[in-house]
Length: 289
Image 1 (cartoon, rainbow, N blue to C red):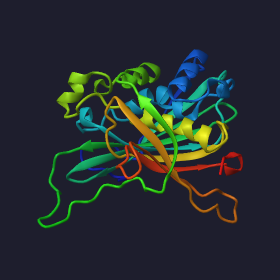
Image 2 (tube, one colour):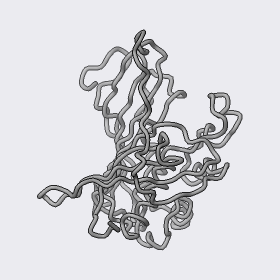
Image 3 (cartoon, rainbow, N blue to C red):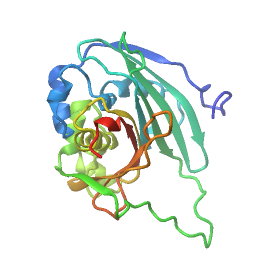
Image 4 (tube, one colour):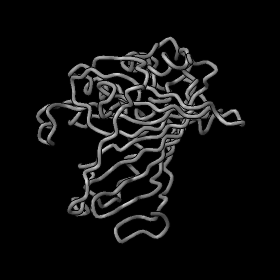
């Protein structure tokens, strides 16, 4: 919904909030990239695009201060990251955030937020659009006799690019690196109170780990090869776990030269329902085919 909003909701799109932040510590970048499975030497002069939640979350949270929803129930539905340029690691970050729209029905509200990060040379280097889902507890379930929708599954023919183990404390490690200390990611009793067997990994951690493994396995180690990464977080990734990165390539791009996106999943195995499902678009000229 945009323009005139229902009672209790602000006018949308909302105001753009802005902050100028100091350069990220190089030790943070090194430890974060290593946690994500990447090569820290690839980021000697730049900041990983997928690190944006570390500085973007606090400003994005301020865009929700007047929203009359139970935000303690919020779920991370997905994210799209567009890479328009690089972020130098020795320059201040210019960050803006706004609440773009709200899509509400009797069951849930989907909050679309956008965080833009740049520098003086690249003011819109990283554009991240995230979708937060707030359950509202209304009706709207399946009608009598209506078939239960089948979950999406990783195609059996998808290529496995990588496998890795996730430690029981992976959620705490990501929280310490990014500042996202939601207890469901690092405190087991809290996670169990919400119906999970144990702590669950941040969706953005899954995205970042997939990103770095795509860089290594699909794009020849080039940290600037990915142009966009668009994902949905489809089910909780309960820790500890063993997961794989799966890819299904698409036809080459059109006559404009723009590469077509590949389909990507993070899952336990081919044929399994994924934790993350999405598409990635990158410079295939530097990729392994």
